[in-house]
Image (cartoon, rainbow, N blue to C red):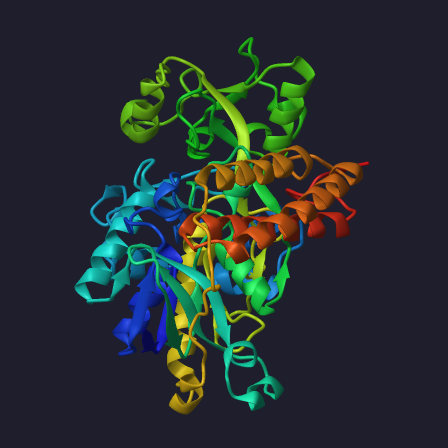
Length: 521
């Protein structure tokens, strides 16, 4: 089946939907695909704490300096300056004003702001601890109002390029150009050819490449892997941010304990209830995430304990009752037998956010014509070596709108005759059903390799072991992939091993510790 759109967006989180809304409002034909059956199921949904917003106590200079300080100076300066100058106003103007999101207020139309680690002022707008879900629901509602096609149960297989997928022998001599995606329809099992004048990757990050993560299972590095295979540049892949406070529980996995708890006074303590962060940073519990994660990891290793604790009950400084200020965290922890209004919360660090990704410019353009990257799949350079808390949602909105503006203004269309020369997907003559147990086993091997050798603290020896193990896994998985009948899980496995290898190779190249890339000899 052949489809042609002005813009094809893979991923329906805050970046993809912001871009789609602006494109549709500008009169372009746009379609959004997601591999999930429920479009609400995105990384955006699980963002708890909030979103950086314009507020009276803040300034462009303060925000710029906080971002660069957290990023260890590895940031792209002009991107940070542009973001600090123009992005914060979008919370009120776009998310609240245009999309209709309802965030917490102190009065009529006045947003409530909370503090988070490494922020010099309280500038984080929120909806208590469900900010991401609130924004995702509002964006989906706006997309439905605009009749934007949002097709669930579709996984992008590969990026279509002129020099690789055209029957016209002359295309191989032209500059590489993206012309669409091959898309797997889960229901039918068919791989369809979808053409587009612009392809936007908004597929999220790769937290699920690690054994412990705050991310949902969907985060398998899909967009990064596809872009890399198509020849796009990736940068800063070694900078994987580990969130210091993931709920440690045998039955409740992947649950983030928001940094906002520490912004409201919570302290990290050991098994005796003694705070220890002041021993690791003058900012103590409000130090950047990489510092806090390493401190917890170090204290766990030194004491032989499986976890540390976050004590909000004894140090809470907020005005609302804890169960009202953090209702989702309160209810989830209570299901696990922990009353956060009385008890310390058991916590461990976990893979949370990839600061690197597909190299993207100030308009979200990758190094290949017609291919854009937005949100966590992209590296715009604003995060540097470590992301400042609550900048990710705003980054998705900001670059989503900028990419849409660029696509509209350039007015580029690929000639129909060139699209007609593209090959449809060619399945192998004979293919085997995928054994889900084998896929699960291979994914777990990748996750354990990354956690053990490319995690919070890295060594040359460990990284070389990871590189060798992943090379072996890659050979076996690619052979398996070429013989398999395609489904979502085998595609995720292929993407995971490619993206994991990119992280390890980048970590090997960077011999210096910086931000969330910490090397020990």
